[in-house]
Length: 311
Image (cartoon, rainbow, N blue to C red):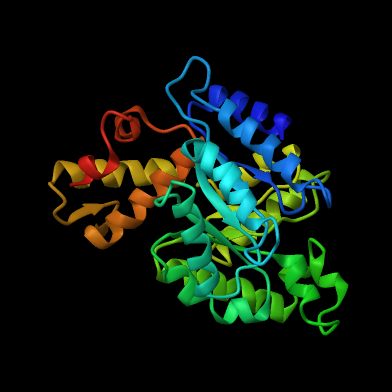
């Protein structure tokens, strides 16, 4: 956890923006019987996060607590959110099965003193996939993530273990269906779909190709990593290329100059519908640490919000 926080600080210094979240894990990170001690450690680490050195940027630190039906769930929430909730960007809730589980988590963060803290929900069973649209629609839910290994295990052997591999998870029909349902549910509610981990981290080109498929074929806009070596390839896969960024910048600047009336660019008509897409290209570029033309970089200055610029 400390190494991840240090890497986040280093990459923020390098790229000028915080390009990934660090999720401090209680569910799989705490040894059986040591849940309270682990929660105390997570709280200590979260409290240590403040401004990055030499910048005004705030670290993005989250926590994955135990599931809502685990004996340690309430203690996790009371300790970590109660003491360090002001340092957290969100709480990750694993094994969410229904809206009732979301309500349970929302009540727990309220009791801990941070009622507006966003919730990220892990969808990890066929029943949860069926409820994904309702879960995503909850106002406190900010993101849906797919839990591959628990999802496969929940099928009682009907899905082979090969579907948990880097390649198999992109070819098995039931796994692909679950991913598409989760991405669709998130987008329908205006939330963020996060792709599950892949175990490949030695072969950078393989990892980057799989991450690119998650982004371009399945509609995910974020992706989990389980090793520091995965972060840069994932960011590269989810980022628009230089030609896309340049084209989007030209269109948005021309649109702004025309006060958002329709324009002609490179022989094509653009209006507010396509402006939204090209603005999202610039948002993705900024969020993945890509270099932006100086004329549009000002849009992402903390002193001038994108909403104000686009109004």
